[in-house]
Length: 368
Image (cartoon, rainbow, N blue to C red; front, side, top):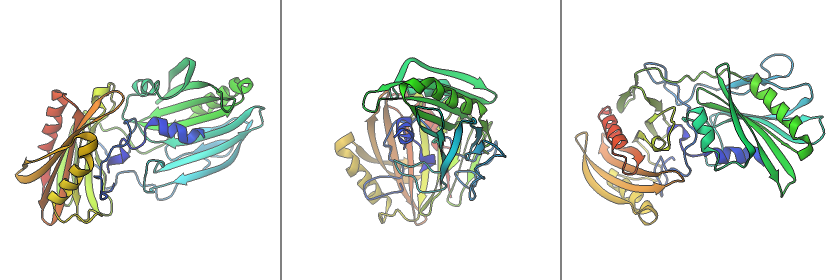
């Protein structure tokens, strides 16, 4: 499952702060929400790392240094004298589902300023959207106030600041910021009474502009290659290659990064070599039939058979509508050397340009 792409929209991340393996009925890449975040690879300019994420076996100490400085997995930041540490939570290399973020650290603070009811600073899912486009994509999800949001540059960081309108149910307002660097997101969120909104905005802004990126991930700068036991693959810019292994398969994901329009959002190619499908499929056809059957009613999935790199492959295709585009997914399943291979290409429906680009990427896959 590639970098948990598309599994958590920014709305879900925001909601969390504010308040597949292959199963019998789905593939390793079922997409359940619109993509908004995804940069978790450990690629350098030439070779993709052996793991999907930089190694975080041990989280950094919560304090970056003495005083009111703290450290998430990707950022250090400071808080003001009127802000006090309460506790923190680590979620490191845990299995991801729709309601969790792997490799995350979340801090809870309190403030002695009247009217500040909640203050949280947390790692969020990464994004492959350019910062301005990322924030624009949230306009239909988040309840910005009449001032909308502002995007500022702070060293290597982009900092988006915004606040929300009064919540009639709770009688509170919200001030928030998102710091973006190398596709990694840090969220600073405060909930407050309306009369304390200016104080909350200052706390949030000060923390956001104190943030420094300390993560190990860097955007790719050139050709990338990955040599696995059962396949190899390579790509060049504007693509990003990520390794995505787990205990039942090895895999890779190729996607566009620094996206600035919605037609680019679904464009990707992934490959998985399964030695254990969990659901116990005994061959590629059985796997393909199950995927087809699970999608045919809701998405009018169609199946077929064609050649893929010299192998007899069973195919499944369907369209799935999101808010801003309709994604076309095409699956290839084939058997080789006792394993079941799954290759998935995706692009916006009827986008012949990016369909052709994804098909070119399939030529860069070498099955061993």
